[in-house]
Image (cartoon, rainbow, N blue to C red; front, side, top):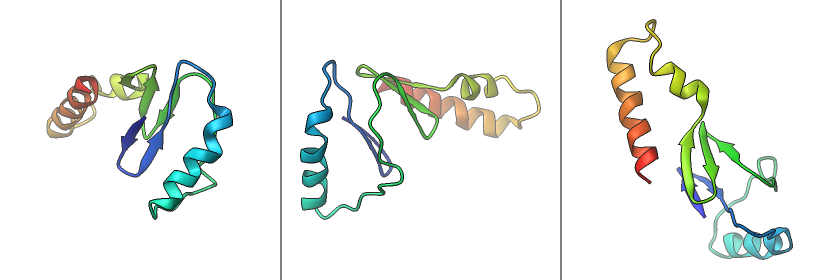
Length: 91
């Protein structure tokens, strides 16, 4: 399970599609709302808000990593992105 702001991602080494309804019930029972437009089931890596979820590992998209070297972006923004990258990789 990974959470970033208000997005939830569940991952496992086994197929848990049959458990999805149970997960949704738990979320609803805890008074959270679900955006069914954004609710998907996907096998393999998933990208959420620019963060790629892998088996127990978080990473950032290649485009985000490339932006760290973009000379057209001002230094303070690049520094903020580097700190963000370090926090994501530390998880």
